[in-house]
Structures are given as structure tokens and as C-alpha cells.
Length: 226
Image (cartoon, rainbow, N blue to C red; front, side):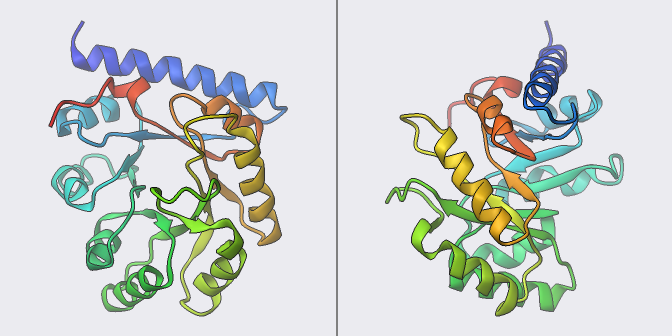
């Protein structure tokens, strides 16, 4: 099998699992959008996924996104790119320039830098606030206790187009309480987008209301060695 055939087959399988999970949760079969996480995989893999009908992609690093995606937009105008990794303030302008959605707004300095970049470039990609639902010191994301105030500040003080929330639960334990916490937090703020769930737990995330699931390994295979 070629890489293109593998990716197309994997996409078919993942889409079927997403639809089944949505139906089990009494939601429409297309209620959750698949974000194909192509980080560390070459542009050829992205092209194979595009050819198989995938339109929404996620990248962790802005520099990698800049290398892969701008040249594809003319041929694939429906394509949308999410920046999903922790974002440094000095990369805010680059992220605003390349992304359709920035999922990792998590601190005031970053919110200010992104708002400044939007003002200077005229581009206003949608934003998600990343919440560190497990309060893990090694992970990005605003701590739970500060999240409500930060969400309000991101919208009201910095003027960001915040449309939802994102989280990455702890690797150990049941992720569903973390997904439920994010859903309840989004509801408090009238936010409709919930980016939660990855290759190993996206069905649990859909059961808790995920609108976007971020799947990489199950589509593209294991990441190439650096």
C-alpha cells in the first residue's frame, strides 16, 4: 500500500468512528469536526489527506505550518489550518498570518501579542482558550482557577474573537471529567466550540460534547524520527 492509500483508508475509518460516536451520544453524525494533526509529517502526507477529502488540519509549530500550508491554499481553498501547540509571543504575528484558528490562547501576554498582530495585519483568525484542566505544570493552558476570568479578559479586554475552548487531559486516568469540565465552562461563557479528544480518547470527548477532535497518529501513523 502507498502512503496515500494508507492515509485515505485511515481517514475513512476515523470518520466512521466519529460518526458512530456522535450517534451514540444522540448527536448528529456530523456534529464533530475532524482536525487532522499533521505535525512532523511531510507536506506529501497533507496533500494525500487533502486528496482524500480532508479539509481541516492542525499543526503544533508555526514554522512547520508556514512551510507546508500557504502553497496549498490556491489548490484547496476550503482548507482550514488550526495552530494547536503552545505559542510563543514572538510567533504571534506569524500565527495570525498563517492560521484560520489559534487554539492555544492561554495567558495575558499571548492574548496581547495576538491582538496586536490582528490589529496590524487585519487578519482575525478564530481563537480558542486552552484550559489546563489537570493543572499540570508541564502543560500549556490557563489554570482552572483562572480560566473564567481569563476567558472574559481575552474577549473584553483584548478583543479576541474567542469562539470556544481547548484542553489536553492528563495522560493517565479517565479523561471524561476533564471534557465535562470544559463543556460546562464553555456553556457558562456562551461558547459553542469544544476542541477536545485525540487519537486515544476522541470517542469519549464526543460523548461529552466535543465539536472538534484532533487526531494525528491514527491518520498519519507514528511521527517520523527527528
